[in-house]
Image (tube, rainbow, N blue to C red; front, side):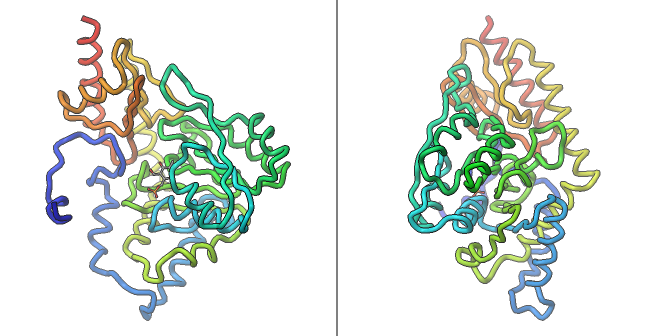
Length: 350
Ligand SMILES: Cc1ncc(COP(=O)(O)O)c(C=O)c1O
């Protein structure tokens, strides 16, 4: 199929997947409105300076020294973070099952990946977080230069970032957090604490949960300026309409309206959880609806949701299923999910 035909297709499923804008969130319309204004770096109105200023304003909002706008996803943020603090032949500690960009970043730096494993939670079919004690054991004797941790995980499992960061600091090891799935965290007290400002580098995908467009993301740095690393991997012809959408996205997240929208999403999910009694919900991040129904494998639940209720989840395993929500998730869509979960749970009980 050609790409144009692919995009012409109508999606009839209720998508609990990325991107969370669900094609209806205002960022999408803003982008379409301004796409016609595609400009280049050499425009007479000095876009380079405008971008620098926008990034400086964003860094103030996040309370860090540097926030960089990424138009090639968290992937490019992880690569730039590693290139900023790792040299050839250094050792970098990464999770064995991490997103592939972690290993790619280490290889691009000419460094050596050292892999760690994570304990497994049989009850949910997912991995548990990295224990600070376990990290300390590795750092004691391995000559590691940097560590990458994914928090939250896909399923919303959050690590003890403060303790991990203290362990790294005591061994003079740079700490990089892949918070690709946690871009809402800095803007709500009801969500897990963000790593931004705690870790040396934090990477967030705006497109995954914060209503942003594919593949907008952010790289935050506490001390080191990652610009020269970004210059090595970025195009010299960035999309200013996409960069504008990042600025708009951050301003919205930081506004009263944006914070209210996050609270409303959380309240709606709390209602869903309350109304589906007898069904188990897990994870540390309520916006990732991690669900399991007794006597039903996660993969079976996923199939029933898809085939009988037109609902697509983000991720499933033999035990549980995860439905991703974000800023573009409407209460109507959540009601549809609630109805489906209730019906399936009743069916299984019979
Ligand atoms: C944990 C994690 N890190 C990084 C990435 C890469 O993010 P992006 O698609 O924004 O490049 C992903 C993408 O799925 C991810 O799940």
